[in-house]
Length: 219
Image 1 (cartoon, helix red, strand yellow):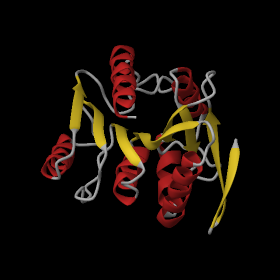
Image 2: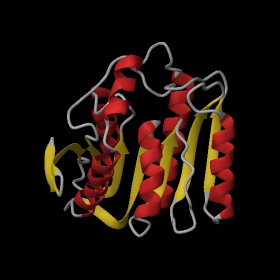
Image 3: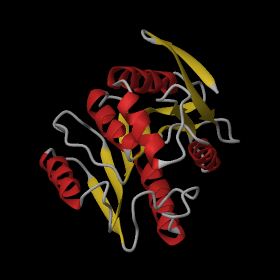
Image 4: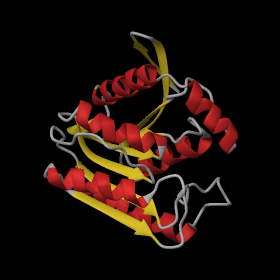
């Protein structure tokens, strides 16, 4: 774990560097479960694929394993604090000596996907590629410069398709490069192998392959 100082105190995060010693920078923004081993493990997988990765701990060490626990965390979370931590993570990754190139990617999950989308509008000069897993967010994309890749479930009570299509239309209207995939028979959290009730290995593998190809193309 690493630490960074912000105006609101110390922030923590997890980093992973490829064996080559350098690579394009990617932020991983965790879901409402917090920075759990699944997300730190995902950082390691991305590093194995050649990326320098930073996952900020947006809940300051708090984690959840059940939906009620996660809902409680969401009610307690301070949006201003989370935005400060997310922006600090962009700066921390940009300054990392192993990062190659001037543009960063973001991979976000549900709650983290919304923050990844927002970051691309707050820091358009830094964010060139955004991958979202089952998370949409209605923002003004006029100032964004990123390309977007989305992975969504065919049946998802947490992220209705109407909101996804509305976001897609806003991205297209702003002239952004956007590709959104919908995975048959998948539900929310289908990518997360530690959620056995939702995990769909075939869809997760395809989404992973598409994610790596997208990040390599845009970073």
